[in-house]
Length: 59
Image (cartoon, rainbow, N blue to C red; front, side, top):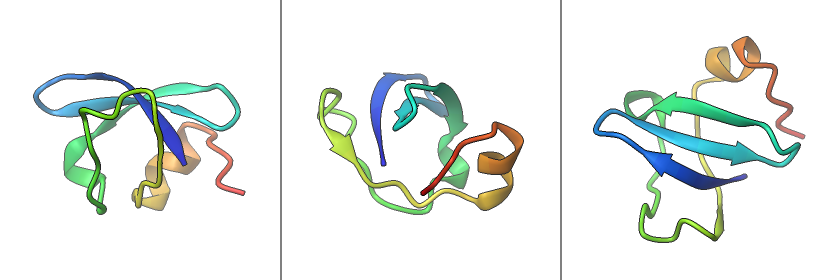
């Protein structure tokens, strides 16, 4: 779960539960998301390797 804080053509800046903001390439987000709902918590399906690389806790 996270909140979209920013967007470029190829990536989303997502703030995760532990208040960590990370740029995630759109190409590895496997779920639908709503970029117009920037203040709403959304569920994201993201490749596991990038979560591990950025020390993002998914629990």
